[in-house]
Image (cartoon, rainbow, N blue to C red):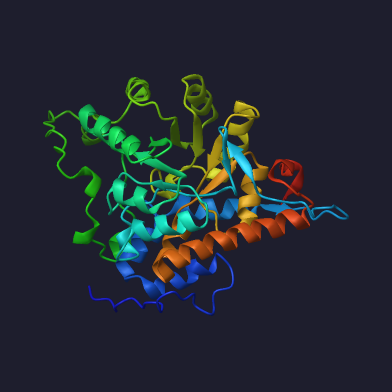
Length: 373
């Protein structure tokens, strides 16, 4: 398949037709090779959950409120005792050289400039040490369990040595099936998108299946992590351990009781189980099960500051931005990602002001109304 070369924005420039954070999604196809764009934009299967994530936000409207004094308003908050200037974190996204030649280094520079916490991915196309050197003081590391425990432990030790402040363990992607959009576009991972953090590791041992064995249960899931693996992991590091990929209230409660520092309500942006509930739909029941106070982050489907407001109103303490981060990176590199964060923060502030909420702790379910069918 042949595709035209992607466009490139002038160095240090934001396209003049970009007016809101969501515009980065509209502009991204101009700046990415078609197969790479389809891989990033799509999910697994037929994108049922990708569509559900976006539709879930449209089900809610925000009440405007009158005569509220918000002149002392701000977006500061504390997550697990750590202060943040705003509730916008950058989600772990793999292989960012699909969007920009410098990949995660550009994203890290933007996070540093905007006082945003970047969560670096195990599957980044730059080493975790390179990302840490460019990121600001608020940086976390996302971890995938490796087939050998010594390799998982090595990643933990490298993250701690590089100054990452927390470990975010992704548990909902033991199996990832191919997405129809990427397959149709003929996507193949480019050579410069190798998982450099894993170089030198031994691959998983070959699995010999008996004729009656399942390629899924006895094959692909053989090395999938269990509760025992999570317990072992938490004993290997002094860093707080978060779990990403939580959608069921019972799992959330069990993780809290096991000593996990916090959770991320996420369906992997629709890249794990096609047909999983929208993250936003799962959020209220999880917050209700956990009660107030326990740290809950959210990702999947956010495209605006109003979306952030809705996620906070339904129980999240802060949000992670995934695809929009990559679209901004493709359009304008570090400047684009920084600009995207600023736009999201300002859009959130506009929504807060018109809803009469001067601070994040004033945002709650009473600020929302479900849209009539």
